Image (tube, rainbow, N blue to C red):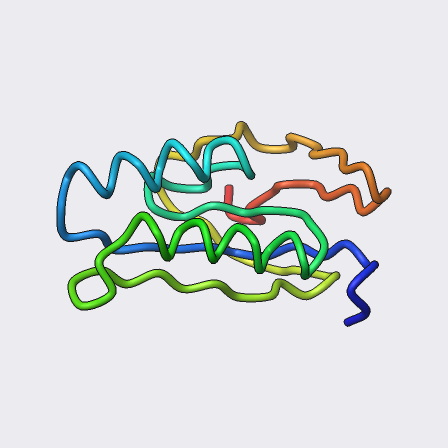
Length: 107
């Protein structure tokens, strides 16, 4: 992926200490959309993502905490069960024009 191209990423974390957990959560709320409490989607360029990950690295304890970042494909299919943050059929609009319909397919 070229550095100038915007992409979607999934950032998930497991933080051992409540203070660090809160800091990482507050920081990621400014960067993307929460999917679950410790899972966020972010849309940005790779260089921006690298800066986000460097910031997170400064907020966590590398020996105790686990942060993972996954590149999401342009066409994403998924299933969801249980209570959802977004109501079924919510459309997310992005600055890059990669609009996505958030829908589970499970009724």
